[in-house]
Structures are given as structure tokens and as C-alpha cells.
Length: 230
Ligand SMILES: *Cc1c(COP(=O)(O)O)cnc(C)c1O
Image (tube, rainbow, N blue to C red; front, side, top):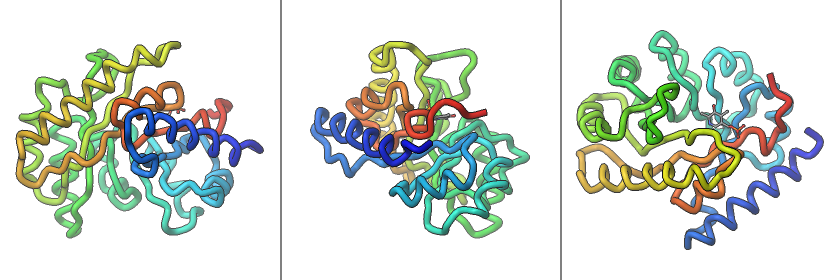
């Protein structure tokens, strides 16, 4: 934990190097510090050190910690979201990365529209086809986007995926390249109201490869906060 500022600096340097290798401006890549299992005091230190965006994967944990955080930090819901947590989720988060089924996007729409909100969401895609992972199947993505785009209260702003863990980050490259290709296909379909603005992909183990393949949001926990988290 003492190394937080140092870890942050190193992660930013690695993001910048990846962006440069792919001919992009490092500033175009948003670092989301994944703070699951990290206490509010440490999150505040990370914000002091320059973190602008945080990600949590549980609504209850966010409810416990967010009241202790300074205003202004952007909050991303990145974990599997149960429909009965949608109401609290909308109160807590600025963007939801884990929209993975029609029933969820319908519930988000209903609750957000009732509150006069338009919530930015990313569609989670199961690019790798892992049975254990959540996400819309690649073949089902465009029909899903077209259905969801017609709903009030939500706006699709991009795609998210998780690559299977592997000791070799190169193994993740086809997954990330696949998500980037799907985002282009959706963009070309030109669905009214849909913006393919964000590609949320890459974690501690594989974010450099993700950035090389076009990620402009990376979700990083362990490389910033260490692995000794519950
Ligand atoms: C935990 C988590 C991350 C961050 O993983 P690290 O390997 O700790 O960087 C990213 N995305 C999601 C959805 C997560 O649950």
C-alpha cells in the first residue's frame, strides 16, 4: 500500500507506452482503479495521488464505502449486477460496464427513466465464449444493441469484456481484438442513439495488450493496490 503512488506512476507509464505503440494519445485511455476489497481510506489516498475513476463490482460494498469518498471521482459498476440491486446501483454509479442481459437493461431502463436519468452503459460481451463468464454472445450482440437502444433511460456507450486469465497476456490478444472488431461492426450498423465510444478491456495481467488493441478504459486493481485483498 505504501507503494500506491509509485504503482500508479508505473501503471500510467505502461498504459502510455501501449497507447504509443498503437499510435494513440495516452491521454485518451482512462485508468479505472478497481477498488474492490480496498478500504475507503486507501481509496482516498489513491484519489489524492491522481486517480479520477474507480470501479467496484458489488453494490453493497459501494454503498458502504462511497459516502466516505470525496465528490467528483467517477464511479464505475464493473461486476455482475443482479436486477434487485438496480435501484441502489443507479444511485451510486456514473456508468455501468456489466450490462449482460435484456432483463437487466430493461430494469435499468425502467428505474432510470422513472427518475429522469439517462444512464450510460456498456454491453459486456463474452468474446472468449467461456461458460463461466457473463456477457452477451458475440452473435447476439447486434440484435441486443438494437433492442436496448429503443429503451428510454439508458444509452449504450460501448463494450466491455474480460479475457480468460492466462500467465501469458498474449493469449488475451484475440479476445481484445475481437471486442474491438465487434465495436466497429456495431458502429457501422449506425443504430440510432448508440455511441461506440468506450472499449473497456484489460486488467492488471493484460492491460498493455488491451491498450495495444484499442482499449480506452482499463480496469486495474492488483497492479495498484496489491493482491492482499479479501
Ligand atoms: C477485479 C476486476 C478487475 C481488476 O482485476 P485486477 O486483476 O485486480 O487488476 C477488472 N475488472 C473486473 C470486472 C473485475 O472484477
